[in-house]
Amino acid sequence: MSAEPPGRVLIASNRGPVSFSLGNDGKLTSRRGGGGVVAGLSAVAGRAEVLWVCAALNDADRAAARAAPDGRLDVSLSADGAVRPGPESGADLGGPESTVRMLDIPAPVFDRAYNGVANSTLWFIHHLLYDTPNRPLFGLAFRREWESFRAYNAAFADALAEGAGPAVPGAATAGDATAGGDTAGTRTRAMVQDYHLTLVPRMLAERRPDLAIAHFSHTPWAPPEYFALLPDDVAREVLEGILGADHAGFHARRWAGAFLDCCEAVLGAQVDRAACTVRHAGHTTTVGVHPLGVDAPRLTARAAADDVQAHVSALSEVAGGRKLIVRIDRTELSKNIVRGLAAYRELLITRPQWHGRVVHLAFAYPSRHDLPEYREYTASVQRMAREIVDEFGTEDWDPLVLQVNDDYPRSLAAYRLADVLLVNPVRDGMNLVAKEAPLLSERGCALVLSREAGAAAELAEGALLVNPYDVSATAQALHEALSMTDEERRRRATLLAQASAACPPDQWLAAQLSALETAARRQPA
Image 1 (cartoon, rainbow, N blue to C red):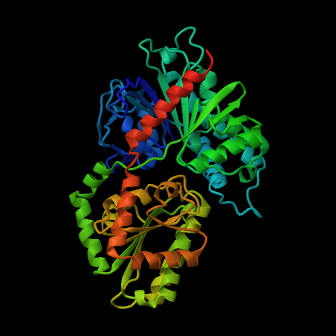
Image 2 (image 1 turned 120 degrees about the vertical axis):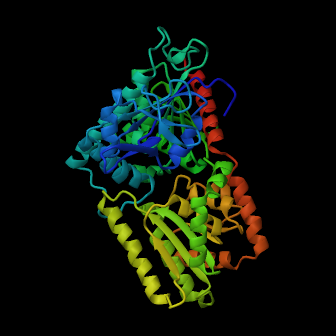
Image 3 (image 1 turned 90 degrees about the vertical axis):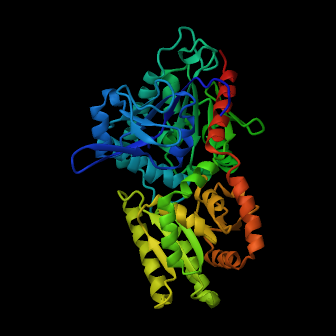
């Protein structure tokens, strides 16, 4: 990060940097929270005074939040991701007086906000997932869910406003030099994360106009014609929520462009595409592209650990000297696992020379099983896998190994052994899997990558890009990847590794803080 004094940083995300589980003895234990958002934002640990506001996601989280004063947790998370007991005053993120505050939002409100709106509506909109002849259907049930979504976002806005400390009298805007109560020249900055919290920037700006506020979207953004599936008032509220921020960030230029298009089409906002700004309701929001990369040294060190090596040995035995096609995903509708398996099946049908010479390792971790669509999708993945094994498997060749349990060391081991990595989402904000494997593959892996992943903008030169809906083209790309010469595969892998490590989490975060500082100074005093 920049050597400039970072001041105080407020972070808001649905999933926090720590999660809890309840042991058989009734004791709570903590561990690092999962997901790319946590990994990226943890880069601020040890470099700034931090308040990280998150939601309690399960009963153990709620128990921990209720036992802590104001939900300020007695754990510590360092910049390297280690979780350990912390001071009684709160969760030490590595900086002075840095804390995690976990919000105990009532379970029914959280369920309607998280499952009803965030994951069943906004996620479906931005990933273009709706079966439009049948869904969406916005009626009374949705309106109740939307009210819960507002309440959920308001709880975050209240916690951030309180956590920012007292405002300096007369500091009316984020552009003031003493914003957020810091008379030393640094300011308090709020960094709000993702589609769950799209309403927070506007709510927080209304509560604390002295703060500098940023919002980052880790998902794609829907084009105007698809975004317009939302009820008109909801579509406006989502956009105006984000436009409460001084700076809005996206992983890829195409997602930022779609956001600008929606602001113009839905709100009639004044959009300057050359300057990447949106002017609406007397406020200007800058829009930036900040692609998140991989912390290569840290990932490489983790992949060399003993638990990973044990999986390397086990998976090498499974491969039996055959080439390995690897995929690692959540069983998430947008990840397109079923079409990926269908492409592998078509490869075996149309290219029988690969029989007995290739194994597909498909690690598909459970995701959002509270939603029926996700349970059925997981079942579809399992059915397709069984069909492939039944059709092609022999006594001495298992063509497909599907695992649906989460095992991070095993995933790192698979990266190390991969000859080919398949990443074929129908739509993805970034996709860090596509960036991690090329850094770890010991022989240099070929990457078959969906052109609809945000990562495609950076990895196109080294990857084999495919239309994620075209199973035949994906099967052909898998054949090309398997047939690639060692020299060509290593050449491409080098390009992929360089691009993947070009913007590690600390630089990604520093770029946003710098953009936010510039944007805040542009606001009228």
